[in-house]
Image (cartoon, rainbow, N blue to C red):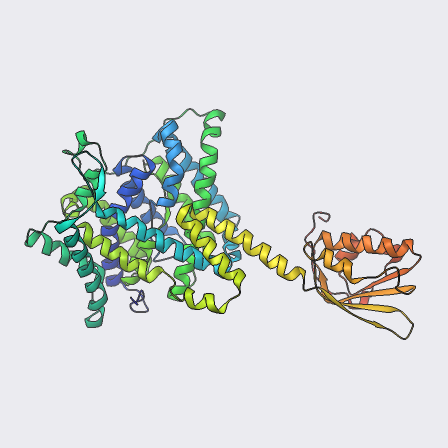
Length: 521
C-alpha cells in the first residue's frame, strides 16, 4: 500500500515543496466546488486561498489544509439559486461567527464523543467520495454540449498518464525523499504531455467544459487580489431569517469535517492538534471569506493527505500552498492551465488508496455486528448524502446500541443477612435503558418485611433511575414493608422524594458521582 508518511519531522524545505504540490491540486477542486455551489470559479479560488492561509496561520492543526469543499458547496446551492451570491457571503460570515463561538466556548472537545466505528466510516466514506469525484475527469463535452465518457485513444491516454503518475509517486520515495513525489509526478507528466504533444485534457479544458458555450473562448484562471466589500444585502430580520438556516448548517458541516480531519491527522502523525483553536481558525477564515468574496470552506481531507504524504508538517506548508495558489491566480495562470488533468487525478487516486482504512476488512471480522453495522452505515451515508448527517447518525446509532447493550447488564445477587433482611446486591448501571430490567429483578409481594438494595457495585446515572427507585419504594410502602437503600451518592439521596421516610442511607460509605438530571442546579 502507498505510504502516506514520509519522514517524521517537518522542515522548511519539505513544507515549501509540499505546499507547492498542494497548490497545484487545489485549483481544479476549487473550480469544481465553485460550480457545484453555483458561483464563479474565482469565488472558489479566493476561498481556497483565504481558507488555506488563515487556518494555517492561526488554526489548531499544523499541516492540515483548508479550502472550498464539496460538503459545504452542496449546502450553498439553494441559497445562491434563490437569493444570489451576496446572501451567500452574508451566510458565510454568520457561519464563521458561529464557529468562533464554538471555539470560545470550547465545544471542539465534543469531537472526542465520535466512536471509532464512526471515524472509520467517515474515513472510508470520504475516500470513496474523493474517488467518485475524480471520475468526472473522464468525461468530455460532445458536439451537443453534453458531457459523455471518454472512449478510444483519449481514454487510453488518460488511463496511461494516471498510471504513470501513480507509479512515480509510488516508486520515487524508494530512490529518494529529497523532493515530494507528487510534485515530481505532476511536473514530469506535464512535461511529457506538452513535450510530445500528446492528446490529453488539461485544467483549462476542465474549466471550459463547465461554462456556457458562449463564454468558453475567454475563460481563464487569471485574476486579481480579492477586495474588501460588505455583502450587499438588507440589514434586517428578513435577511437574518433567510441566511440563518444555511449559516447554521455550514458552521456544523465545516466544524465536523475539520475536527474529524484533525483527529485523523493526529493519528497519522502521532501528534495532537488543538480542536478549539481550530474552531476559531475556521471561523475567522470563513468570516474573512464573506467580506472578501470567497465561498468559505473547511478542512480538505484529500489535500491534507497530499500535504502529509509530501512531508508537510508545519504551518509553513499550508501558508505556502495558499500563497502559491494566489501567485498562480495573479501571475502564472497559463502554467496552471496547462497541467494535464491525468496528473492531478493520479495524485488524488493515491490519496484515495492511502486514505481508505483497508484494515476495516480485518476489523469487521474481529468486532461485534453492531460496530460493523455503524461502520457501513456511516460510510454509505457519507457517500450518498452528507458528511455531517453521516457522523450525526453514526453517533446517535452508536449511543443507542450502547444503551441497548448496557440496559441488559443490570443484575442482582440476593442473600439473607443475619437479621433476616433480604439483600439485593446490584451490579450494572441504572439508567433510562435499564429501568424495565431493574423493576423485573424485585418481588415485593414475596419479599420479607425489610429489603436492602445495595448499590456498592452499581450506579444511578439519571433521573429515570431515581424515579424507578421512588416507584419501587412506593410498592414496598403500600405492602407495609421497609426499603433500605445503601451506597448511593448524596445527589441521588436529594433527588429521592421520600428519602427521609423510608430510605436507609449508609452515609459513611456513600460514593461520589453525579447524576444526569435537570432537577438540580
